[in-house]
Length: 291
Length: 160
Image 1 (cartoon, chains in turn purple, green):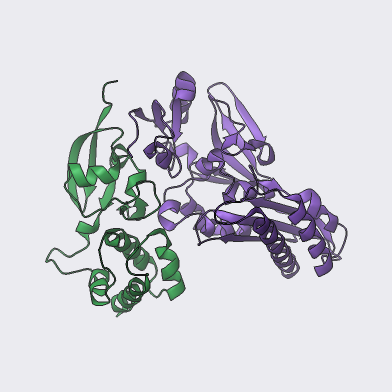
Image 2 (cartoon, chains in turn blue, green; image 1 turned 135 degrees about the vertical axis):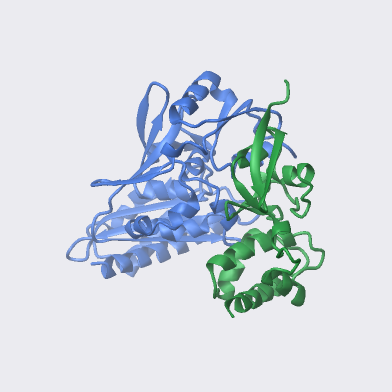
C-alpha cells in the first residue's frame, strides 16, 4: 500500500495553486490535511497524476470576523477550530461536534475545507454547515462563487465544485440571539464514523415559543440530511416534550439510511428518533437558559 | 514516468537531515528506511491504527498519512527522541514498563508519542480523558487497562 507515482508541487500562493489546477484539471488533486486523500492514495483508490500541496498557502488558513459572522479559511485545521475560544463561544455547535471528528492525531492535520470537499456522508461537518446555513466561497483562476452549504453536497463524496475550483473560505452567519444548539452522535467508539449524528438549533421568541429551528443529520443518507422542514412543525409553538416526540417520530419515518455492518437501517432510524428528541430537548433548554 | 524527486531538509529529534526523496515516499517509510529510525512502527498505513504516530512541530500526527516531502522545513520527534540523553526513560516509558502497558510492543511507539504530547497539555487528566486521548491508537494485546494505568501513573509522577 503505497501511493502510485505522481508529480508533487508545493504551492505557496492561492493564485499559483489555482493556476496549477486549471492547467492539470481532474488529473490534479489539492492536498490539504490529507487525512482522507492519503488513505485513498495508499490504497490506490485515488491516483492523481499531480498533487498540489496547499499547506503552505497561508492566505487559506485564517479566521476573519465581520458584522455578519465569521469567515473560516479552508485550510483551518480541526484542532485550531477546537482551540478557538471566540469561535466556539459564538458557535457552540462546533465545539460540541468537533471532538466527535476522528482522533487527536487526525484533528491535528485535517482541515475544514478538506473535510467539506471530501463530502463523506457520515462526516459531522457537512451536516453542521447545513444546520448553520454556512456559505462556501470557491475560487478558480477567473471566477469566484458563493455556494450555500445546502447546495454544495450533491452526493456521497461528491460536491458541486468544478474541476478548476477550490473551496477557499467558509462563512458562518451570526446566530440570532435566543438560539440554543445541541449536537448528538452515536458511533461504535468516539471518533468512529457516525451511525447517526444530529445537529439541532432552536431560536426562541420572547414568549418562549419557537421562532426558528434547524435540524440536520449525518450518517443517514448520501449527503447531509436537512430535516428542518419537518422540525418546522415546532415553529410558533412552545417546545414541549409531546411536540418534540412528534417531530422525532416523523423524522425516523422520513430518513432512508442505508444500514451497514455496524447498524441496520431500522436501528439507524430508531437512533435518529432518540437523538432527535435529546438534541431538540437540550437545544431548547440552552435557548431558555441563554435568554 | 521518471521518478519525481525533491530535496528535503528537516530535523528529527534535534538532528538535522538533508535527503532527496521520491514524492510518493510516505513519511513513515522515510523515517524507517531513509533515516533508519525504525522505532516508528507501521501498522495499517491508512490512518486507523496509530502505530506510526510521530510529533510534527510538537503535535501528534499519523506519519503514514503524510509524505516525506511535506516534512520539508519541519521539526519531527519520534520515539527515539523520548529518552534523555543519558538513556533515562521518559516518565511514561518507565510507567509503561512498571504497569505492563505493553506485550508485543508493536503499538507502543505510537502510544508513547500520542500520550506524551497529551500529558504535556493535561497535567492531571481523568481516566476518561486518557481513554479518549488513546482512542486513536489500537492495541490488540493489553485490553488498554494497563496502558491507562501507566498514563495515570506517569501523570502523577510528572506532577510531583
